[in-house]
Amino acid sequence: MDQRQVFDVLVIGSGAAGLAVALSVADSAKVAVLSKDTLASGSTRWAQGGIAAVLDSEDSVKAHIKDTLTAGAGLCNYNAVKHTVENGSDAIDWLIEQQVQFSKDGDDYHLTKEGGHSHRRIIHAADATGVAVSQALIGQAQAHKNISLFERRMAIDLITCEKFNMPGKGVTGAYVLNDENGHVETFRARTVVIASGGASKSYLYTSNPDGTSGDGIAMAWRAGCRVANMEFNQFHPTCLYHPQAKSFLITEAVRGEGGYLLLPNGERFMHKFDDRLELAPRDIVARAIDHEMKRLGADCLYLDISHKPKAFIIEHFPTIYERCLEFGIDMTKQPIPVVPAAHYTCGGIVTDECGRTDVPNLFAVGESAHTGLHGANRLASNSLLECIVYGQSAAKYILEIIKEKQDVLFAPDWDESQVTDSDEDVVISHNWDELRRFMWDYVGIVRTDKRLLRAEHRVQLLRKEILEFYGNHKVTSDLLELRNLVEVSELIIRCAILRKESRGLHYSLSHPDLLPVAYDTVLTP
Image (tube, rainbow, N blue to C red; front, top):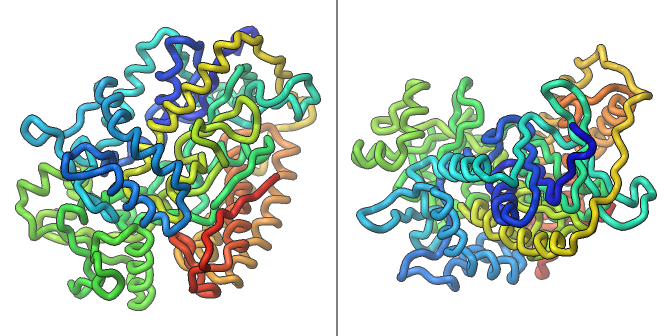
């Protein structure tokens, strides 16, 4: 990259959150958007269900706030919830302006209902909402003259004045691996936005695409940002169980439209766990499935909507119907085999309502951020809403910085003079497998103090080994992801050890009770 090429805003991540920021500032700023793979490779396009917002006269902001607070198990930041919900309808209007084609019911937009919601408020594009949002926003970004899009660019680390003893304060850019040629480029910028998604790839089984390795969270932590509530990993209750069906989610809306969860013998079981049955919040449903699988020694359980008319199923869930057919499963005639899988990182980089972090001129939005919206458990379909609302909030503050017309601070080039090419990449693959397996076994849906301490011991040994490898060899995308995964895994474990209760997504057999006062688990570098 030409060192003379600088930007007002550097956005790390090309999903809904990052593109919401980019498109909201681009009329007044020069913007670079980095994507670790292709522009559409992130988690956004995998969001099937939809976006929660108050769009119906029978619904209310008050009800949406209440549902979010209830799902969050007493740990939501009320101001963050209020800010998100109150700006929900405007966020949807903005998406419609960006040409997102939501499903209609006559002249009105069709709204569905999902677990934890008291009203139908999920606007969607059939069962492929994320694809519709991703395609529309990418199309708008590609057409904007002030937005430069860079594919196969993986951010390595943030550049800060403090790290290099430079005058000034805060972030001045980032080192970025060009995965096409193996060179490390220096991106200079007046503001940097982390929108790189969550850390579910820390786990062996996940509904997420391959890139969700906690890169932004790890980079922000290394740069001096606090992180919070990393112990709250949401496990989606229903991932398709099939050896070839890698990371395929069965949307919550299948249960919202009347689907039943069944044991292998065909019996329903959710009545034993919650009065809301299949529409209980995700943490309850995931634990119930996990409990029944372990009790029975079953490899999977089943989700059945075959009692609904075939035309209804195909109309509402065309993507799932076609994908299941590829694996010999006709969901109009038979139940779908499902298992829980790591799905969403509720914690992350501590931010305020403008997306500001502890490091000046560094912002975080979307799943990589901890805004306080989700508390101890994210309410279904609030995630894409958060991306847009907080993306636009961050954009307003970034524009204020841009107006100051200050020069971009100096950022030194990457130095790899002391490293060599690796001839032992087996170390990377072995550590990758070991890390994700013990995270699943010891830091999964149900935890104990003993399991967590074992995980802490293992992660510290692995971290030392990986950092030594990183210090001696030229960077590759696999090595960078592993470095970030071991970092965020340790943060998850440390947060989990500090929480001496069971709340929301953190369920500990060693501390099964709820403490009377809710508190955030905040870690400081």
